Length: 221
Ligand code: AMP
Image (cartoon, rainbow, N blue to C red; front, top):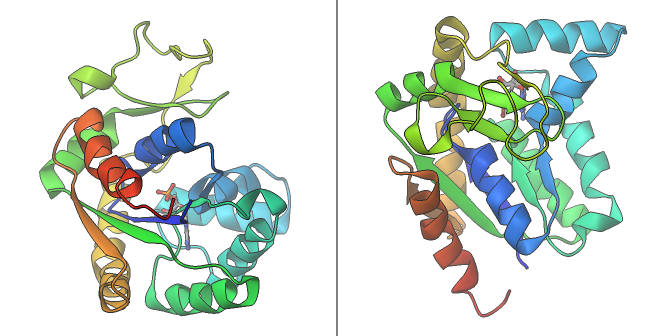
């Protein structure tokens, strides 16, 4: 199985798509956002720093994220393929990621760019709810992704919460940062011939179909 990377604006559905890939292909999902949210809970200097950056919608310092990613990718469960989500987020991180891959002898694999319009993103941001137990993602603003029982996870019965940065103000900062910092990395991967563009303005199932047809259509999996 080749490695998989997602590039997408906030709330475009990359976490949801990653969950579906994990379910079908059983490879680890490495989300720098999830790792950082766990660190933000720690009562330490770094925990407090990360927590503040996350609430404002800014980016955590590159040296912290680069180190976290390399440590995680070194674990043996990544040897047969993994999904990386939320990293790299700027061109400096993309270059560091190239060198991490080089050191570990890994290929970048598929880079999926999820395109989606800004109005839809705002709607998704305010409706996103996450299970505090199993991290399953729901959206109360999108018909086919509403939990069956209010505030309760369909899968494990856990309580659903709203991320602190899922509000319009933090969204605007995150979206601006995406346009400024993340879009240049698209060219970096386009030049390497590994970029696949996905139309994200569809249902979860339809978006997954587009992604899966690329993954399963490759004889090298
Ligand atoms: P996400 O879950 O991918 O939307 O990430 C949530 C937040 O975590 C972002 O708004 C950033 O504050 C932080 N974050 C996640 N990945 C990175 C990264 N690669 N570099 C810097 N900050 C990050």
